[in-house]
Length: 265
Ligand SMILES: [Zn+2]
Ligand SMILES: [Zn+2]
Picture 1 (cartoon, helix red, strand yellow):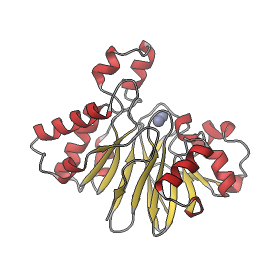
Picture 2 (cartoon, protein in one colour):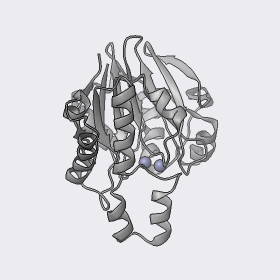
Picture 3 (cartoon, rainbow, N blue to C red):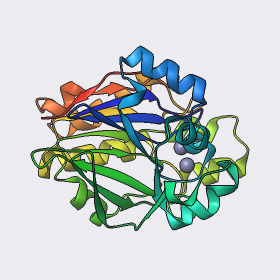
């Protein structure tokens, strides 16, 4: 299984989960044009995409979902709450193209078991997804303000993940955002900070199966790739984990172009 990022951040998110020649588009936050350009740059044939999975209704996750579903003739998977909140912005979608899923349950797509993991985010019914081939597991874990024990327990079976490292808390606090937005981003229903991401990775490296992690959904204003990597690497090193494979795999996903690929075996 391969996990590609076409773009990652508040200007648009789109990931491709490739397994046995078929692909899932995880979030469609780029325009149709940008998605096709990203697919071409990543060497992925749009005809291999069999479905779009949506995490939640924020525009950076659904901006191209309606258009791509229509153009590729493929179904959309999301929770009932996300559908309710997003439907007016997706254009005309026939009902048979909408597959409603329940948080906390699994379904099978492209030979993968897909788990919908509920997360803490200021959306109606947000989830993240975990992909299991039967031999290995990968997750894309972003847009959550908190990490519960249940979440890390679920993630502990993952071999690889994209993990949100949205902001450096000090940069957020001292930066230009209005106070209400600072409060929202840092809240339990906002986004993960570099330090929160580092704690998740340290826990998974100590108790889980993780060997690879790419950091994603970075803020353009309150973070930088260098700061995010340094924060997570320093935390892991302080825990004595600088010999762990996950420490050596750390990379940042670019905000506007395809990034490094997780090869999950
Ligand atoms: Zn987002
Ligand atoms: Zn969001």
